[in-house]
Amino acid sequence: MHARTEKLFHANITAKILLATLEAEIKWFQWQQSEQYLSKAEQQGSLQEAIDALSSQLPKFLWHVFIKRQQADSYEEHKAVAQAPDSQCCLLQMNFAENYRVGQIK
Image (cartoon, rainbow, N blue to C red; front, side, top):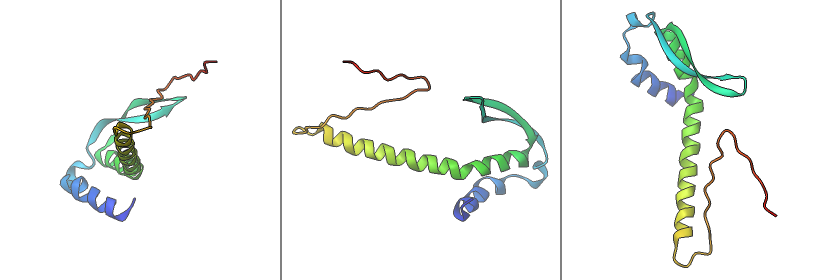
């Protein structure tokens, strides 16, 4: 994990948990890949195991947030260009869901 991210995670999550509770047994849900799909699976373990699972996912999550923000900013810029009174542009937003098909009209 990136040093700054690790420090923030420790300050905001780990440091606020009493050491005595780290071994407490808890249940939580976590997304898991099963066959071709993601599904929520119930996990059971110590609070420390849950914290470790969460902290291991932070770099990937932060990258996801970065990409999402970049895409949103780009979309807004293109939307502004397309909405200009003298614009020759058209902005299409497409959402490819889990099951999609693309066809061609001749």
